Amino acid sequence: MAIEIERKFLVVGDAWRASVTRTELLRQGYAATSPGCSVRVRLMHGTAWLGLKAHVHGATRLEYEYRIPPADGEEILERLCRDGRVEKYRHWLRWADHDWEVDEFLGGNAGLVVAELELDREDEAFAVPPWLGAEVTEDERYYNSSLARCPYSSWDLPGATA
Image: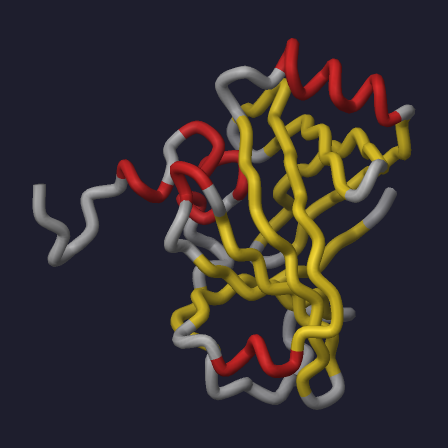
């Protein structure tokens, strides 16, 4: 069993870009989702993983990831994940004593930028970067599996015009 404790936040502005140490394009798709659980394939830089993720409580999830042959990952993405995909640039950076991942979404989720922080405990303290916006850890709309089904561009956001 693998436990992941991850908090998610909206990102404000571009100041975070100055601290980026690496950037990769991620393509991922969801072969199955149900309330609280998802089966995902992820492709990045010629590598593929099959992942299972389940909500436990708060910011805690069970996560299992297995490397699979890249050709299998491509086939799963193309044949089993037609209606459930997300593409994003993942940026890695260090702020204070923590490693952050900032996801800059593409396609139907363009315009959405989310920072993720993995912690050892849900109550672990961390320095808050100036580019960190509202916390969305428990807002299911921001789960990648949800964004694959209901992209950010389709949301009825305050101030949006039709």
